[in-house]
Amino acid sequence: MSPLIPAPAIGMNWTSGRLDLPTHSGRKFVRDLIGYWQDDQAAQEMGDTLVYETEMWVPDPATIIDETPGIVLWGSTILHPGTVGEEFFMTRGHRHLKTTHGEMIFCVQGSGLLVLMDDAGVTTRHSLQPGTTLWIDGRLAHRTVNTGDVPLIFWCAWPNDCGHDYESTKSQPFEPVFR
Image (tube, rainbow, N blue to C red; front, top):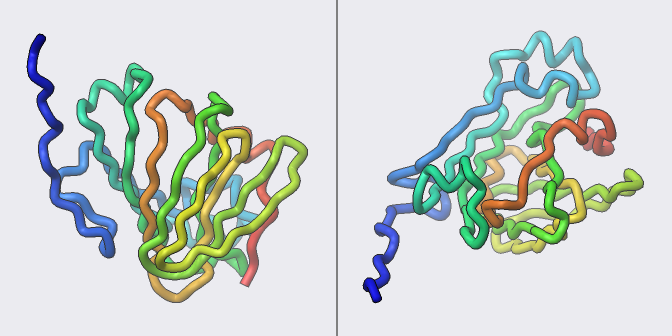
């Protein structure tokens, strides 16, 4: 039997939300969330404004493409403070295609909300502040909202094969969170 080889160590800064070696990173601007905001005109005017950044590490970058089961992915989101019109900055939100696969969220900085929505459109809101750890049931759509004046930074962990559906939250939108 071959010896098990551990994944390489990676540097991470819990409070800044940054990884030394992210294998995937992204940035979303107001323009990337057109169709999610309540005030389309304000969104058009603010198109180039950065809303959030993500960093993710996976043991093998190919696994995110083939959705190999049994692998846990993890990463961070830095959700900047701000509003589009009177609506707080938010992530676009999503559902998991495999409803048996949930997600963990760990808040390390800022203040905000985790907004959950069931299939009937009923929403619940949970406060996010440093130290908050929440389990997200895989049957619920979820989004985060920054209601504070500093970046909302949180880490998440989820199964690689959960699948993500971002479009359904456009056709059945979350209740907006206004200032």
